[in-house]
Length: 137
Image (cartoon, rainbow, N blue to C red; front, side, top):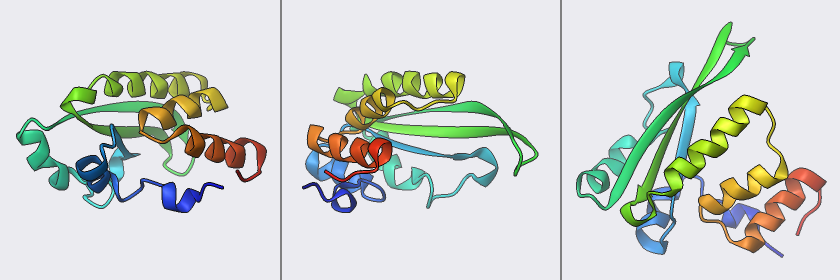
């Protein structure tokens, strides 16, 4: 059985990238809440980007009208990847574009995103079982 809490990369992205080869980190937030180092840790990643070890990219997606904001939600995504895994960034951007255009996140899209972020097959199966079927692995 997979312990999803232990498998979660959240708030451990840089550590996992430096020590265990995590291939992609992705951070996002509504632009009105940025900059915020706790949400998108630009300063922590900056030395690794400056050295060429990691690459950084970003994109802002308009997810349409948000009642709470009283305007369109503009979500900024920031991506970091080891230089050798840079191909994952445009792949993840494509996943996010599909989500933006369709407003849907089917299991197949969730699986692609999870694999791009470096989760194992077993972790992805456990996560999808929880999210899409309400069961545990």
